Length: 96
Image (tube, rainbow, N blue to C red; front, side, top):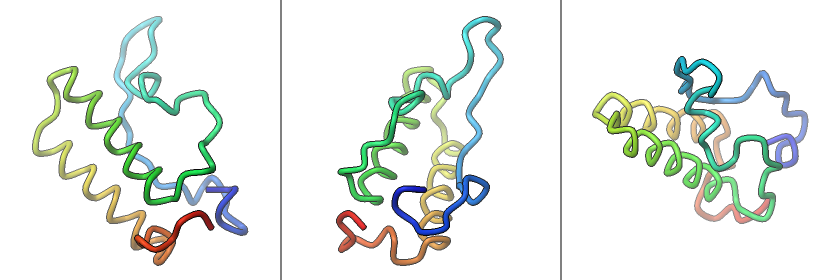
């Protein structure tokens, strides 16, 4: 987001808490495709959000924890990003 939105700061980030206790192994966040990697700046914001949500959903599905509550939280994550950043996630925005 810092690379895409002028004056963006990390405290403005919208995220979902997905850690769980697992001594010595970390949590679900470490299983995400983007963990510890530089962002893929060639993707549009919409593509990136979709990729991240799909990845989170896949992790919960693999762990047999995906349910209506997780689905609802992911939908809220999408909605909050779209309403907070207004046109930034519109279909027409390719790579601001």
